[in-house]
Length: 611
Image (tube, rainbow, N blue to C red; front, side, top):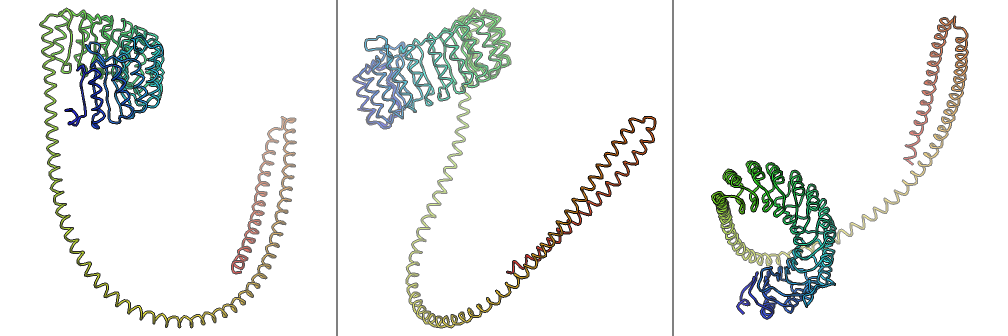
């Protein structure tokens, strides 16, 4: 009753044991509050009745943006739903276009009413169908719901065709290797928009992980990936590391608790040399060993993007710790390093504490559960605390700078308000001026009426003038008639001149025909001359052939015959020059004839145009 009198945006009642009665009462509040956007009713011992009611409400509600009914594993009063609630949510969300976040973790929507597994995977099928029509849901958390391999596959088939979903949590759902294959197809689809994916605590194994991560080579959208507790082993880890050498979008990756040994860790070290996108990496609870620690330290000496690195419970000893000390001396990006529960001795702890005091970036170093003395741990804890305080003091300075900016904006607002006030005063003056102008307009209207009367008298005078003009027009028409008769006689004279021009044109055409005949005669003479020259040239060629044969038979008189041949060649060149001169003369005659023809055509053109 109290909440009905308030304007609400967010309602968080997590862990208040409301049960179905309280939830149904709150549902009435949801219907009456148009401003309510976010609701959290997790761990309230809700049953199927309230779950189905909230699901059906989403079909018609166009206000809610976020609804969380999920339950933590450690909750004393978890919400207890079944597949009926899951199917109801799937059907309602197909009609909803406003909800962006839905939390249903740990509520049993993958089970039947008797808590047995659902062989038909009705919930997953409903959600998979929902993703084909819903384009608003961005975050879906359905972890720990016993969906199984078949259910996860059905759900992911719908996710593969949905661009809106950005965050998907399918952890703790007993998903097998087949889910890895389908997830790989989903991540490789161009119609999928996933950015955050949590598949932890599923039995996907190395086969499923290898099938999934191969799609990361071409994927450019996924930012965060959690595949911890999936038993990926070395084969899956190596496949993931190889894929991330080409991937340029993934920033957060959790591979903890996966039975990854030294081989998988070394693959990660090789990948981080070329990957410049990953910022957070967890390899905790994997038996990596010192060699992996040394190689990762070498990467950290050059890497500029890793900010969080978790190597807890990885069997790293003093050798790996000392390598970390040397590497972090020059590292400027790492801010959080976890080395707890390893094999680091007191010497390694002291060196890490010394390094922490020298390195200005790391503000969270965890080496608990190692063979390190309390003194070293206290030094590290004190230094981390001091670093955090220094980092927190930077925030007030930033706030002070923002305050100064806001004050300047406030000053500008005051100046704007002053300008607005001046504008309002100017507007009032303008209104007063408008009233005065209106009075002047009324006066002008009375004066214009007088002017209209005068204009009417002037119009009467103008009509009289029109009558006089009409009389003058009749006189002009008579003059036009006389002019038309004169024009007729002029037209007859022009026709006589055109006939004369036609006769002149015929004479010119005859001259053109005579010129054309002369040109044809010249061309025929030129052809005969060319034939004669060709015959002479052929005879000369025959003579040359005879001379060549005589040269072959008479080797003794070679020099004399050579001289005679040279003389003949010179005579041949003279003849050719004479022939070319004759050809040039004929061409000149042809051009002169063509020019004469063109002159005749030009002489005929003016006569034609005049006609």
